Image 1: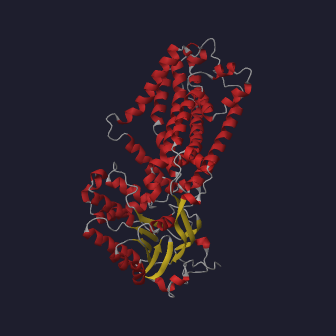
Image 2: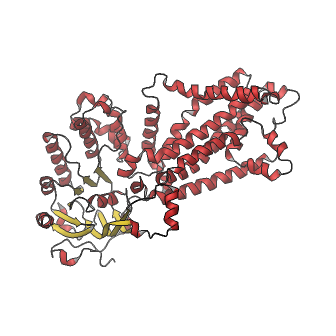
Length: 249
Length: 316
């Protein structure tokens, strides 16, 4: 991994002084919104801060783990990088093709067949028709679904469903991969296969940003950890020290 | 260039923590989640096609009659209106070939109602995707509109067949009017649909508003009556007539009337000549006004959509 040259090479991800607030209770109807305006409640008082002025960069080919307890802001950070959420303050930049293993299967429709879902989801993740056709066999092969691929996804077991979804996501051509807690899919052999695949992608120079509570996977893939606590970055450094910091609470 | 980029509290960070790159060429970077609105959709043509295919494939899955429903619904609707308006209220006395007059306008109103309803629900019903993956969000209303449009085509086919039975002879002018009428409606709905799809994310009141709009749409355009009736009733308020006919849907409906009903030999040979056979007076200005309305709606819809889009993922 090209971490040594991180100061010269252009980074893949830049997160600059980013803050994010969420509404504690959002106005669900026009009436509520109107009452909010009339009562002049300040907006900030009805919000909580999910991220507080966080900054970091991830270099070309680096694999970085975003660590923290539940609710610390890890997934929010990942969503900001993927573009699903926008920062309220600060800026986020990415370079190259970014795709996420974020909640794989979000684009799956139970009434479509496995094959139809593969094509639809590959397109959702940014693949062209040609790329999907070229990789189709590989995707089905990796998922281990076999002949079930022509059946409607609603007849799949949950494991099969996740395996196929994961398989599509992992075969997308990309420069930056965002991984969020999806490595727990499938049975042990499939998990091992996924880890090997991620390892392979990392070795090919794909930049990775990983959110996971699994110590093994993180240690195996990442050399650097960013620890977030209550929306603040409290540590950014080697993975072993990051774990020490995390366990210190 | 950017000092203090390293926003991490220094005290908490060991000395070896990676020094951030300070010389950054931002032109090589993208800002995630920022698109170019409707223009982006052209780059995602392939995905748009798959999304449309999905909605048409799923619409009648698990239903015995399938696509037949696309014919049944407008037919029943037509019969109800025909019996009540044509036979009981006797509108057909002034309008020869009234069934065709009614049907040629009704299909267009159906197109408007179906596409607007689908577009309004599009973001909310794709919430799983919108919350998890960034795509140009305009894809969803647009796919919904085109998907609903495919269900208009069977109705158009029925209309053409019925017209031929009435002795209709297709002409280039008729084809042009039909295409223009559909284009006006679709562009109008795109603007309205973007607006209501965005508003519906935060305020589910939007779908109720749209229900009312659809009822008004059905009755505010000359489908169940003729423009001539409105013209006579607004003798002392001519401006009201002009405002009424600046509605893009009304203009499109008149185009459909001309293309189908107005081209029938039966209608042209009728005596006395029906007073709504010609174009309404100053119709060219109504066309101009309706194009203006469409442009304003499109810009406003896109503007509101883009403003609201930033918080879609957290509001859903």
